[in-house]
Image (cartoon, rainbow, N blue to C red; front, side, top):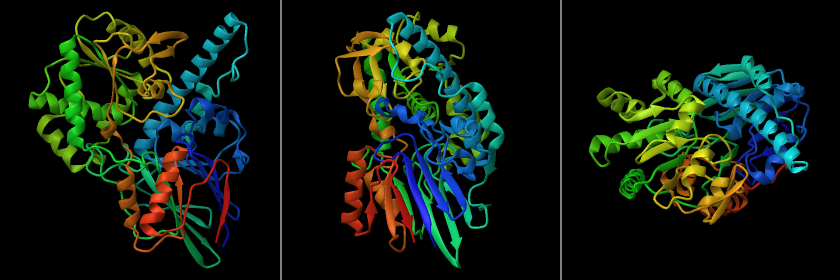
Length: 468
């Protein structure tokens, strides 16, 4: 038996997730994500490691851009197979890919104008990485799967999707490879969620695997509890309202925006915060929220009970959805404290940049981060305490209060990741630590070795391994 694995992304970094599995004549790509770190974005333009037309299938763990965002390029360059994922993931991925294509087109147009004005060439081509037409070409290739129902890819590969508890429809994928009368099981964790989080179910655990790919986004730290998270949100809202400022929440459209609304609704029901205007200023987040409403069958017991008692937390009083650009611009003319939840979560694009421009230099305002900030992103520079940042081509002093709430993370922390691994009844042949910055991935790799004695590898970009 010969299995070949190649690490084409999310290897000692946290975006661009792509793992290629080859079993004799069958090629399967697990995820096809976009690089979002500024220093790594050039990789998005590189040729794929193998001809896209030679790949038999894509297994998509979930719809975050760093896992699905390079699919339009893959399809444009020749991939014609199926993209397997859950129905919720397919619906959300369609929204995210079309939005990403629009941003790619707008960014290319903006660069052309700016570079012409400045008389220089940009670091990246002044054409979009892919277009709306490219994104639309992906959509017919999506094939819905249900949790725990196996699918065959060729004669030797079988894939089964299980709930990852990360975001709605997210999956851990178990791949079985059968060759020469032997069987090997490879587990791809995707992004593993945390137990006891609102809305989604807990991550599935496994008893057996020969090889495990495990993420390590927070492999070097331990999160605070959910009650601390809700308490901190309440403190931010109350103190900012008292100061007369606005609360700007850079948030991911998928899961994070909905979870913020969930906690705010609980705080309102408890009387812990006053009524205030809340704007969900993200057409994508609005569309994703509708997907949540359509897939209530994926909610955990707590969320299901909450809906029975209080209706939907996505319909809380004071919430307004800013769909059109004119509605977004009008928010900045409103008198009195407001909360604005806007994309993107790492401040790399989207409407949140315009809200930062209007609020980041006001001491009475708060910028509340509720998600991971990758190295090189505007969000990372702000949370790192830089006093001056460049937004939309201009420099702004950072005078607003900056708050980072780690407990919001949809990623398991060091202890939770280890507990997930410990559910295996026998040591795997090897564990591959992926999807974490080098420091976090190496730290978690060392931790797993120390705690279990297992063989652990922290692969680098484009590394290849042959498994027996």
